Image (tube, rainbow, N blue to C red; front, side, top):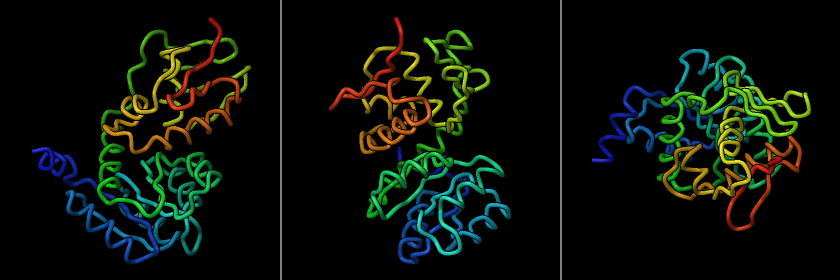
Length: 236
């Protein structure tokens, strides 16, 4: 029954797969078509940007290493036109590359080699988040903690009066932490509440987004509790 529901949800949803390794591109496309998606494949940066302009997809599976120009540049160009969920693929488990990918607008990433089952699950989860839309702000429209100001209605964040430009996922993660100040939230709970994942296979995704928030807001704002999760450290 669950499989049938997933296929119904995927009906008419378009996914663009951008991958220059034909074997991987064909395998990803075949799995996503089996899930019920309409899939188009592009093999380089320019072809990916052209495909997005021709028929805007609902989601992009995007390899980092591409001919023409790389996946980071593809991400920048297509996000500048119209925000779209992006799942990045990388052969290098390099923290800098991953942080840059998240900073230019990717929502999630997977390191090769990966399981096709997990890739399909993450595609479904990203699309469910988009379908739900932005969460209705709880409590006051603006949250203030010391010099941190979070305007939920306008989705803007200021630290010491300076605006921090967060990605949509970074903003949602920060708001979730701010809703439970000084409370340690496990990675698994953050994955379920912010990303909509039912399993703990993507805890490194949480870690990478936390690093992005620290880079933009300062290293003192979010406390790590090793082996557990994270807490927003704010004045009582």
